Image 1 (cartoon, rainbow, N blue to C red):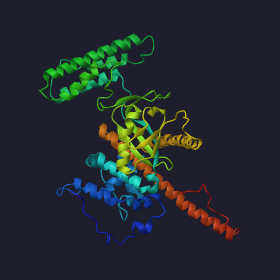
Image 2 (image 1 turned 90 degrees about the vertical axis):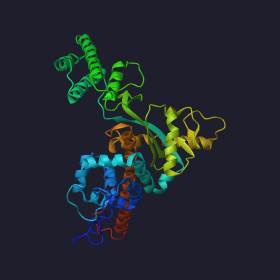
Image 3 (image 1 turned 45 degrees about the vertical axis):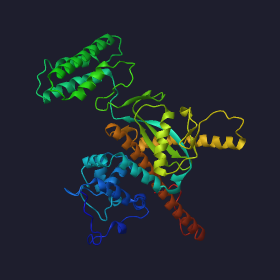
Image 4 (image 1 turned 180 degrees about the horizontal axis):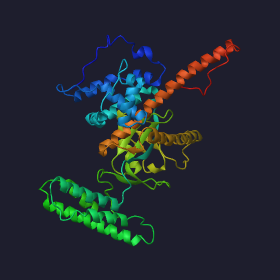
Amino acid sequence: MLSKKKNLQQIGFYSTFEEQLSRRHPLYVLANQIDWVVFEQAFGKLYSREGRPAKPIRLMVSLLVLKHIRNLSDESVVEQWMENIYFQYFGGEKSYACGLPCEASELVHFRNRIGESGIELIFKESIRVNGRDGREDEGTVDTTVQEKNITYPTDAKLHKKIINKCVKIATEQDIELRQSYRCTVKKLALDQRFRRHPKNYRRARKADRKMRTIAGRLVRELERKLPAGLHQTKLALFKKVLKQKRQDTQKIYSLHEPHVNCISKGKEHKKYEFGSKVSIITTKKSGVIIGALNIEQNDYDAHTVDPAFEQQQRLTGIILKRAFMDRGYRGISQVRGTRIEIPKPFGKSVNGYQQQQLKNGFKRRAAIEPKIGHLKEDHRLSRNYYKGIKGDAINVMLAAAAMNFKRMMNIYKKMFFAFFYSLQILLMKSKPFENRYYLTPKMAF
C-alpha cells in the first residue's frame, strides 16, 4: 500500500530545511533538479491499495542513489540518513526527523519490487539531469568486469562446501546418514594445506581425491533417501560440480552464484576475474555515462556492441554518429546506425583533416579508462554484493547513475566557487588594501 501524503501546509512550529540549509550545497541543488514525480508515477503502480502503508517512494529512491554516490552499504546509508540533514532533505523531508528512515532489508525488497526496469528509469533520469552534455552525438565504448562477491574458486573448496550442504540438508529433513564424515573432512582439510611445498604435494592431492569421493557419496545417498522432487535442483548442481574437469567450459565456480563466469582480461596483477562483463558507453567530450549494460555471458567484445547501443538509444533517443573503441572490437564497422572507429592504418581515401579528427577521437577514448576506475573505486562496481543475474544488472546501472549525479554535484561546486571567486577579484580591484583575506582557487567546498 502506498504511503499517505504529508500535509506540508503546516508541519510544526520549527523552521524548515529551506530556511536552515545552504542552498549552495550540491545535494540541496541536486534534490531540486531531479524529477521525483517520474518515480512516483512509475513505481506507484507496483503497490497494492490495501495493507500496511509503505515508505515513501522518494525516500527509497534517494537511499539507493545516496548509497552508490557515497559508496555505502545498506546498513550504513540508513544510519547516516538519520545523522545527515542534507540526506534527509534529499529524501523529501521538510524538517529534521529523528529515527531510522527504514530497515536496511527494506532496500532489498524495494530493489526487487522495481526490478531492472525501475533501476533503468533512475539511470535515465541521471542522464537527463546532465542536460546537453548527455545528448552528444559521439561517444566512446569499453568493457570491464564487475567481480562477484565470491571466494577464489578451487575444487577443494567446492567439494568441502558440497559435503557441508549435504549434511545440512540431511539434518533439516531428519535423514540419518551412514556417516557424516565430520572428523574425516577436518583431517583432510589439514592435509590440503601448503600444497606447493614438495613434501606436501602428494598428500594434498590424495586428500583432494578423498574429499571428492566423500562428496559424491553423500550426494548419491541423499538422492536415494530424499522424497521425490525435493532439493533436486541443488543435487543436480552438486553433481555437475563433481563431474567438471579442468578444461571444461560453462563451469560452476560458486554454489550460491552458479552463473559467475571466469573472465581473462590480460592483466598482469590479476589474470582471472570471476563475475560478469559490463559494457560502458560515455559521451566523447563531457564523459556522461549514457549506457551501462551487464552482459550475462563471456562474449567477445564486438558481440556486446549491439545490445549496448540498443540500451543507449532507448534511454537517450539519440543515434550516435561515431563511437570510438579499442582494438578489442575488431570485426565491426557499423551498428544500429552508428559508425565504429577502431585504431588502424589510414587508407589513401582519408585526408589529413580526417586523420587528425580520428587521432583526437582515439586520444579522447582513453578518458573512459579512469571513468571505469572511478566507477569501481567510488561507486561500488568493483565488487557486486547483489544476488543473481538480476543483481548484476542492478549494480551496474546504479553505479552509472550515481556517477552521473556525482558529476552534476561537482559542476555545481565549481559553478558556485567560480561566482564567488570572481566576486573576490572585483573586491580586490576596488579595495586592494582593505581586504587581506581572499578566496583562493584551492579553497573549494
